[in-house]
Length: 229
Image (cartoon, one colour):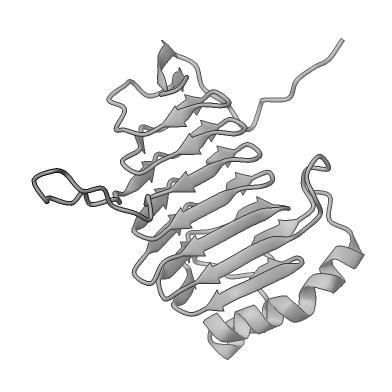
């Protein structure tokens, strides 16, 4: 993220409001969470940072990250559930987070979503450390509606999402309830992911629905720069 001083200045007041709502005074005054152009739909429930050191701006949400998407900040609603950051996190512009009344979202250290992430955690979403999510992805652990069988039995309509550490989810993926990804999984762009994947670590999955494509491949976030001719 290329963040200017003006971006930080614009974020200060809404970020202070957010931090005073969710953290003890001493922690809140450090402004560990910065929100750029936030639209607060609900500020209920809890937000926690589980880290040995809590510092200024360790969580950034809504700041400009990808110029192809509107510079519209972030929509945030917590209807009563829990949002837990386990360290540093960056969620880019045109994104939205929705936590349900009983929902829980746990986001691992060094998380980055470039732009237009839509995350719906009305049941249980867990993301491991060092994960990357490309632009315009949707993660939702609920269908918001149930189906009914002819016998009268109702479907549940929700299930957990579990994403292992060091996973990379490409652009415009749809991550549905019941998804479980082992560490170092790469999800190719435009994929539908909707089940537990009993595959080796360092694998690529992709497609609609996503299937195993190859193994022995992963993204090294310390050495992943594309060298153009």
